[in-house]
Length: 286
Length: 272
Image: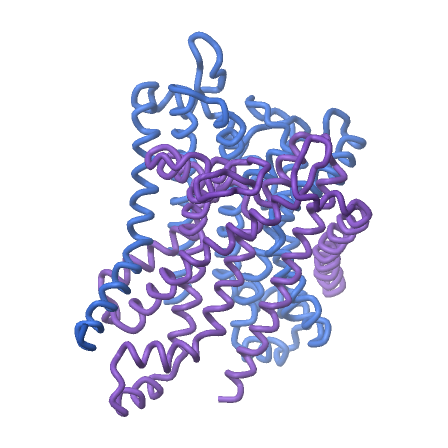
């Protein structure tokens, strides 16, 4: 092969490589949606999304996923309530309160936290948090509250690193200006720096929501997994993700299609969250 | 007011790092005494819950995934930065694609892998199905880090190479690639930690067999999956702790490597 045609050949190889991820996402959409939508059409979208009973082994079976949708929403809100304030304030600490030496020690800690597999968090929650919750509230200790605490911890590194980056990106002049006007260090950070970094903090929260809603294996260990409408935060629930994993191993026919349809609903949730994230980020760039 | 804010900020930091250190400490203290030699026995039996096959399977999965994903990811980066016209439709589409891919939860990848690789292509629960599923998952990481590394390369470097008569390919492989190596490497390291920690994408693709896979078409379980299965069974808490220790060690090593690498990167940037 002459060197010129080799150049063309390699350009083709690069182009094909670049197209692979596009092909992958098309295949993912194709298989998840064609696997799930026929079932939804047959069963009825309203019954599927708003049905409050999930009893695949009854005759006739019922496949309402509202309990799981609510379960996912509850634990995600719980994770946000616990994880976001702690995460954002830790980011404030890292970027504005701690000295350089300490920062060099703590920052790798956040990276480590982001790298620890979620199954390790799940196991930790199972052996440490579940017994504590059980002692305080009775029952099994596997419930909305436990899952929320677990997810709150899991989203911490996501919230912290993105918030911290956006806090750091606020121009130094904002800080100096506010101090010059007589505001204290703390006041400046809360009323000038944080509002200026608003969109980055918001993106970090959206990313955290995506992370919390998508988390699966860790949640299985501590959420109790009962497919029923959430009542109190000390009752067990099941989320969209865990519903898939728990039953997929033995599901057949209609039941299996219902699980794929569950994944399709989850996928749409995620696409909406991702879309919001991209819009927020694009807006903040402009 | 200032005092309240200061208190809240410090308390949050203490909670964050307290949870981190308590969790690591707890798992290490409870796990290390359980790292008995029999845990590293060649075979997993009902009497000896060996994690050795899981270690080997994890290694196999990491190596195979990187062998497939690295060239694809790096070549994608080459195409996006070195070949495609700035702002072309295809570049835009690929950007949106990789951004979307990186947001998809692993259970959706797992289900897709099961439907496509395991059932449609009839790979069964296998090393191959697991590898290909995880490849799609880590692609965005490698693509992004390659892109960022390539973008930071000064155009004068490329122009100098062209000026000396080198072709485009030669410039990319001999001049640009060596400079971008640390950046690409950091993407690869990130991928390794993602693969090692993965469970939801693997349970229905790689499966959970307890043997070391002896071909592309046989099933196995990674360390993380091993830990998940043990935790759900609830019978082998000691072995779960021990597996947790190994996982933490691997992640710790990966983190130290990537910190060293990024320090090196920032130093180089400062020197310029």
